[in-house]
Length: 417
Image (cartoon, rainbow, N blue to C red):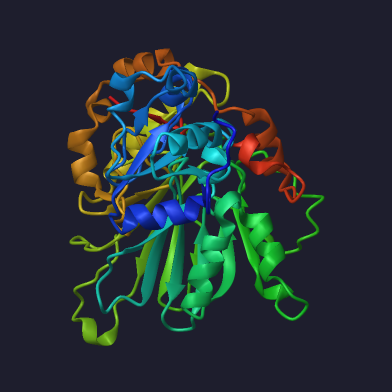
């Protein structure tokens, strides 16, 4: 009875689903996986933070009460892990008179969907910043562009959505010249190698530089890229003559994690309103914290062993370094928590350090309380994290790797208080 194919286009690309959500179209998301799969990882975007869950086997019970929960006046979009169960559900619902499509590739396909937000900076600032968000994983990377020479510096690019970084560069006529990771990622593959491979030619090879923490356990002997620079605490990376990124060693999430702060000189016509963070009254300064500090939580530390030691490092990072910075500095992390933050199209995720101090109770704990709490908070480790660490440690190419399966699952890099 239910084997008849759906007439017309029976699948919807994940990117097209995002466009429908962005345009506020009248759709109804229906997740047909198991409750366990749903609780671990689900679509969470704009007004669709908790899609309706009805496992596909329950749909086949043909329960009228259950079917009433699926509105016939809306376009139904079914989703599962890889698109197989959702197609079965779509065929069934089509037979019952619903306008329905199945998400092509399921959650694995949704894994490649991204959103871009421009970070607000003063009109007179000599740079622009974009925040690139991987919706499914809560990963975020950044592009900083120089208005002076139209070059771009990339921070924490994500391999699975590397095209988004290229799009920003192309749309704004930028040349990517510098790429850096704040730390050695364990939950997703870095996009640096793929981006470098894509943008490098014989004529610009010497101009493209990679920056990595000198305090992380990297082995880049097989990359073949000659311009790999190893950053230590206090080093500066020039964006242009007026703008630099200053490295701050912020261990805890990893031993060699670095945060980067923008220092810049105001333009001549700026009347000194845009001072950098070294001034007594800083405004519009930006701190890229990687996975060390989030807008609503702190970095986890059990991605490596020795939890109490890392907890102490993390506490000292906060209280001796980050919390010593001005309250109005803007924190730009490398992750957001999709269960607590509803990602909005083109709306950046950022917060002032002062607000984070008030919001995150862990930051006001005593050292002993903090260490005990963090060390005792055990979270599930990302799937395949050992493989991902190896890939990032050696800066391997990933063209032959099934990225969607390798990185399946939710973001789990933060601890909230």
